[in-house]
Length: 335
Image (cartoon, rainbow, N blue to C red; front, side, top):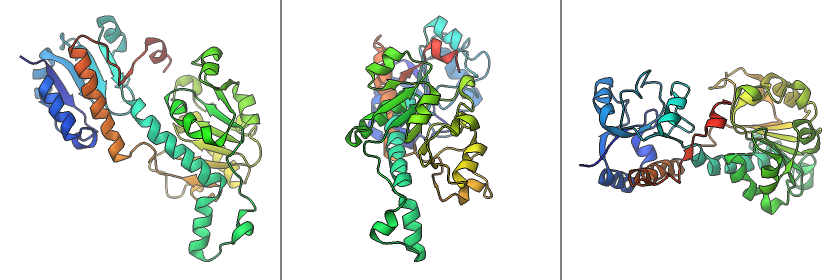
């Protein structure tokens, strides 16, 4: 008899993350419970938990307290939402029982990095501004239209956060010959150097970077890391790319400074989403804005489903998972 796997990915939809070929592979290695886009009903979930060896989920909130106790055979929890299952999961119990907790943040790295590069270029070369001008008939041609633009080539770059997003973005910057400083208190300076960056404190990084990419995951210790005083350290005319979470920045101060022309910004994430229609950042010509679209490319999302099946094959064969991102106790405890 094949082992039982609960596939309950809501808020994700099944076709959004699973290609037909990967679903076929999944059914070949396991008895699959539910596997629909709607939330799994509680009665069916409770019936499946005692025999489940793995749960594929879009978040742990629906499972509630005590669900781990009702799943004695559980060997893996695989989150397809973009991070780990959430604070409702008892991670310490999972670590104690040897239950693998696997996330899918890795899948978003290439998509988000591509968008970050595109938005940085749009900001420094004023692509959106130029598009709006030519549509309204106010464009300036040739060199007159480039008087306030500049290039990314050879510019000093700073990374706030040196994890998965940074690893995806760095290769895209190689052709631009950018020296990169990185700040990440979760990593040692030795590791940061081995990754190809110059370790730096946040103040030095901000003062010496023409482009700053905010790439860190949110944690209590980095809320408003880039406050008003630190934002004032950016060189005049720099570009700040906010691509991970608005949690890391004083967004009111950012808005004021961009409206005042102090520096430029490229922003994909906001403290409130959807962004209120009357938010002043909408009027900032020095900002390139995107509606949290960096990590939602349909074809790339299906790599999550492929990785889920790859790692299930490994786990069921008694081997370690290699594709999804494992929860690490030392890092989870800092969130």
